[in-house]
Length: 252
Image 1 (tube, helix red, strand yellow):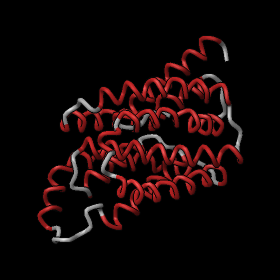
Image 2 (spheres, helix red, strand yellow):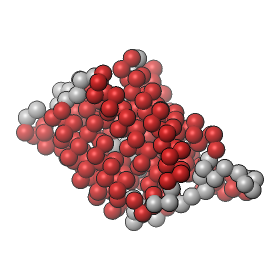
Image 3 (cartoon, one colour):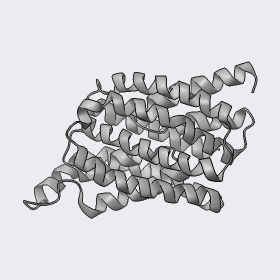
Image 4 (cartoon, rainbow, N blue to C red):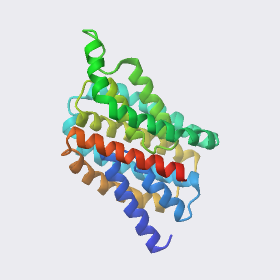
């Protein structure tokens, strides 16, 4: 990479770190930049997974107050994310990307619809929920988090949007607390995928290092910004970023 290409990758890492903590879809900033500087697609994806782990960690630290009393939920959903992320990483190495890539825009659009209708659906679900029911979303949320983990381990763009939509629909919880859990689950997926890629694929360590440095800073900034957003504003940001993600994927 030239100096200017390295700067571009670093700046992309900062932007991705911020967006991932607030909403998700940071990969749609870093991945195209890595391709633009000449890194092959699979290597770019693998290097991106490594680079975004520090940003995810900084986001978790920034949201630590919202996570303080959610240990049981994190253990339950985190296990599903870990297993899903590992499956997704295996698929990236073993399978062609065409079929999976084709459904990604559909998944993101579905997630955006769920985000928009989430308040009404959450009220309807709460009204029908039986006393003593599972407060953590039941089996449906576990399966959804596992499938999102597969997606995240494979490519990861907008996995945060999918997680927010799923948990917003199935949990009776404040959006900021859900966002904190989302950051932790995304970190788990990125970390397990990166660990798998370490032994099975090629990593461009220069690119991964630049994204890591940028995403670490961006994650800290994003946590400060995201925690101050009201639920309606945060939901609006989710929709806007999700639509941009779909547009970029369709164009590419």
